[in-house]
Structures are given as structure tokens and as C-alpha cells.
Length: 261
Ligand code: MN
Image 1 (cartoon, helix red, strand yellow):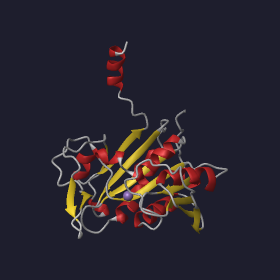
Image 2 (cartoon, rainbow, N blue to C red):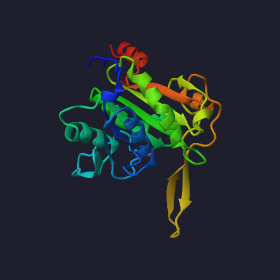
Image 3 (cartoon, rainbow, N blue to C red):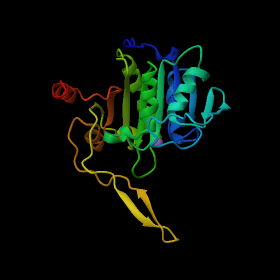
Image 4 (cartoon, rainbow, N blue to C red):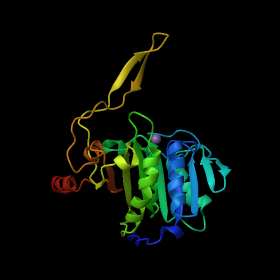
């Protein structure tokens, strides 16, 4: 697939908005506001229910219903990936979107979060379809969500992103710190980081005495290396990380080729 040429004028762009928190999520409304501030050709196709941590799941064994919620606004009883596919192939048939936006997710998608994230996976699906795709997440860990910070900064970020030639099979992951708009410590282009601690599971007991398990969130993070998403957001910066769909470990590929020769 060839690279996509830069977009100089987003006002003529067709934009598809989706998320993983569902059609009624406040973050989706924030991203729709961002999209509408850029273009009048904005379409929303989002999951009917909360789909966080479903990653790139695709629904293949039950019917997928499309529900019209309003003008150019639809819900799908499925995953974020289902929404992008139905959005592009069914709802927006005739003209594919120039830009797929996913989010704004309730909670950051940093480091290894990317492998669980439905928000990032929706952008991944956009990239697989040969489209420009950007995922937005707000790092809400405490306090009220600062959606207004995304609404303020995202249009500028998007304008700069789409002005670059966009490589094939590429999505961009943006994380916004939960600070007031003018408290943000700049915008940094950084690599995907990796937490030092693992996800923990809490074993609990239900009222009948039977055990059940609860996935715990990450605790307070150790200092993260500079140049990573985890490091930059800890310093209050907005992070921009380009991702690609090719998971191949090139160095090990070479090693294994030698071993299997
Ligand atoms: Mn989510």
C-alpha cells in the first residue's frame, strides 16, 4: 500500500469518529466536537455498549445490528473494529473517510496498554483499510476528566499530523494528560514505553464463599525513561506515538533464519 499524501485543508475532509467506551461516552462527544471543529463531513459509528480492553476483536458468530442514533450518528452492537468496518463499508459507502478518529478514551493507552486497547484497535483497523487513523486517550487517574484539554489541543495536533505524508499501515496514538488546557507541558513525539510492573490479579471471596478474581490497575509507576509515552505523560506532556501493524521482530527473524537454515 502506498503512503497517503498530506492533507492541507481538513475542512473538506470526511471524518469517521468511533471509540471503545460506547456511543454514550463523554469522550466520544469530545472527539465529535473536535472533528466538527475541523469539518462538516463528520460521521460517528460507535459501539452500543462499553468495549474497553476488547482489543482488535471482530464479531463473527452473531448478527451485527446498526442503530441510527441521529444524523450521521450510528451505534453497532459490536466491537470498535466492527464499527470501523461497518462505518467504512456500509454507512460511508461511496466515499471512504480521509481520517478515522478513535476515542477520546476514558484512561490512557500507554506502553503495553496498546495491546489491550479497543480505542487503539479501532485506529488499527482504519490503518488496515489504508486510511489515516488517530487514537486519542485522556489519562484520567484522579479528579474530573478534562475533556476540554483534548478539545483545545486535538485540532492543532490533527492539523499538523495530516500535513505529513502518512506511511502505509500506520496509526498514531495520542495521549493527553488530565490537566487544565494551559497546564499542558508541550507536545512530545515519543516511542511506546513499557511498565516495569505486571498487571496484578486480586483474589476475592463472594458472599457465598466462592472465590472470584478482579484485575487490578497498575499502581504508582516507577520513573519512566525519557523518550517514551509513559515518561512524557508523567511530566504533563501530550504524547504522540506512531504505531505500525507489522509485529515482526526483525532481529530475531534474522537469528531464527540462521538457526533454521
Ligand atoms: Mn475505553
